[in-house]
Image (cartoon, rainbow over all chains, first blue to last red; front, side, top):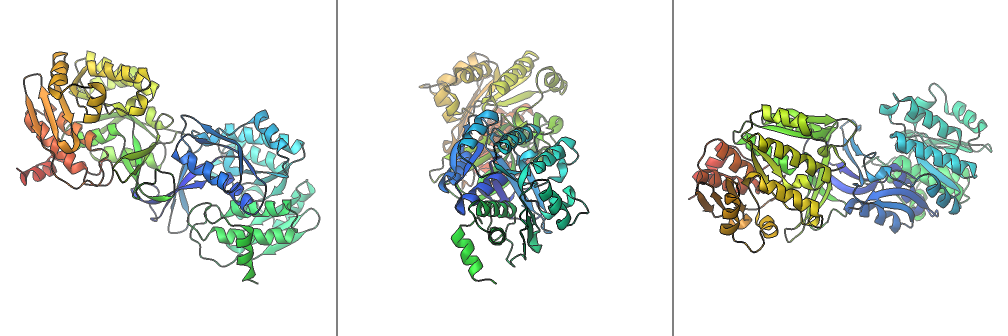
Length: 309
Length: 309
């Protein structure tokens, strides 16, 4: 569940979105959308709760998710409100400048409360994923937390990618929501940047064991170019180096990683295999321009892994 | 006064904004913004009432208008709301497909009522321009009509480009606002498409004489590739053939034409000269990609005209 956005990627460097330049888009995007697209691609039975505007950009999103088999019974089309959007401009040092329209777009109008909870529960979910990108607006954050608590109460495993936005940390309510979600999550899937904010000074060993003791089932740390490491409540542990690949567009790689890991675990794969597949899917994701254009099927992941140690 | 938008122009044909393609942007845009930029370029003392978001796109707009000398004392920067936007995709037959974000963006938050009226009146305006593009949202239309009536009451000449959006004609309130503005306009500046909707079956001679008898001072019909024709209350009349030029991007040419005509009249130019300059500015406008990138100074217009009969 969460925001559905179209994304425009600036193909000139260092513009800061401040001058006329070349862009490619509209790409289907939004961290939750990238996740569900990838989960469907690797074979999970999927449903998405979100909203788009009644415009061409909304069609880009709804047709994309429908095309990969995501159930759209909880994807609203909101009349008169524009589809959410994101514009990303890369700097030479790899940093990114964004212009977003989320809270004042259809992206924020996802089905909430009973309406969504009953339909999601009826879908017989094994896992429900939330990205921290959905928590930037107070109303969206409250709705997300409500639904996660209700589903957690019905035994659904919550999957949480903190996806911390540093500019929001000044708001104590934002961090409270992040912590409330951490406390009920089955899958805790931070990036190295997230871990530095949420678990300062703690090693992976330290914070993963603490989270597992508090009720998490799996903790995985995404370390970008340094690969990934994970631990499970049953004593599982694994780590993988990153595959050396050319980085065309890193946006979405973390969401793709999370989706592959959760979908593989839910399908019964071993912890180590789920992490190995997630690590490969992340490497495939950065090789294509567009936030979910580098998403991959099981067959593509397996072909990629077949040629590697 | 009106909506300030950034515009992204798709450089691939026939995409309908429905698939990832190449765009160029963000260009400063919005019909009222194009008008005021051109009015400033041809030497008018100008002020604009509008609003942008507190983001990179808002800076594109405010820096552009400030750069050409438009007074920005009535340009608001609205926190937390995105800057307005437009995406235009051309079809092979020259028709256009748009995705807009206006009513739910900062573009709709222009200063209204007493706040704007007093400041505009204090600027000692000779003319106040409204584009029909501002009337698509009921709240914006009501604010625009209020301000025009108040300024008209204080003796300011209202300049009105009907800029009819056919998809809005089903709403009787929209057409009522257009007609209310026509009734108080000093400058009536329709396109041929506008005239076909507003004055069906009437020749230019018929509807211009009727409008002049009802109080308009100038009526000018923009006929695109067929040039322009105009008439004034003092018996002025003139018509010009369109200059044969390569059309790179027609968006904004009508706004540029209107601005040149009104600014020249206000500066004391003859009716015929004002129309001749407007006709040339329109021709220059279509030759550049971007809605106001083809706007031109008096010197550029005169250089263009110097080489022509």
